[in-house]
Image (cartoon, rainbow, N blue to C red; front, side, top):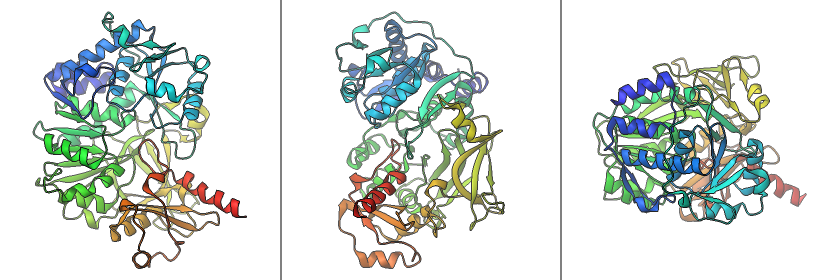
Length: 528
């Protein structure tokens, strides 16, 4: 089987992640998968395996889950320590016809409890560390059974003890039935559970298949995104079907990342915007950890032009580009744009791109006040295509309220230029009176002050625009340099500096702006 044949099969029958490893092995079983950490569920496997071996392990784990009592159509909540085995276990759950519910290990116990209750007595697949974290929850009431992938605990079913269980025949769910459930970032409260089907997952591969075609050789693809995210499904699927060697990464420390890039020399890196920001300093490393990179790719959140420029200049590859995708869990990839070495630093960071070709999403901007959306009067951004998520699990009314016919409201505001470029200015909930775009202010100021590692604009208790800043190594801010950098933004209040570690973040490292704003409301209340 060729990768293109497998891809066409997915477009017809949908993307079933339980079948994907076996399908990729049929394309090229010898393609290597390298990890920067050990698999918790299979520690003896090591950090280098082939796609064929990977597929065999998924089949093995599927047999163990069946022996543990998991059956088709059941929900299996996967909440465990961050590890590449999460995706392997999710594929195993899917392979026996069950529905995997991916929960981030960053979620707190109370939130996990709410989501377990929402799903309705699912199987919980966890590990000893996370089981202990949930010690205060009544798991016997919230779950049907608890299975541990590592670190066994009393009263649980151990996958390790089920080694050698008979293999079982794959169970393929209907193309429009729930296949994988992920959750939203939870920037405004309890995350929503987003339901993906085999059809919607397959459709989302369409616009991205072409992007990977920019790589003519079978060079290494480095993937550094949360293992629980819907983005991981697309990233792994595309890389494996294209027969690219995969470097699957968990570690985030720049020193660790540099060692991996130097050793494996990836040509394509997919990572979070905040991860790329954290790695910017590696551009000065004389070993050139980014020297081999042809394509940098990112989604999830806006990324600052200065970061893209720094990374591109650190690549030695001719025609290196940074491809930014704008989308969200409910939508998938909506629009995209390529940035290049000699122009990225001059780019307008609010221009997130154009609709992608080959049957991708359609975009429109709808007026909020009856007037035509424009730069000074942004409208609501909406998306329509067959790749939209099917529903919010247990919250159909909430889903329906956000969808008008075929159009989905992203919650973002912006406008389109006469050339069709979509400019995203802010989340509607984050808009601040007197500020055209918080994200634009952040782009401009960050480009002027290299000592800033993060800048987030939030609304204060009196509707003022408060800049919350973090500096490299948490060094004190030079107030004179700050004042010089923000002369174009007189509406800003005095900056508030906090340690980088205190920024509230989501599982995809987005700053929780609402939570940050509430801190100032609470302080104002305490002083009232």
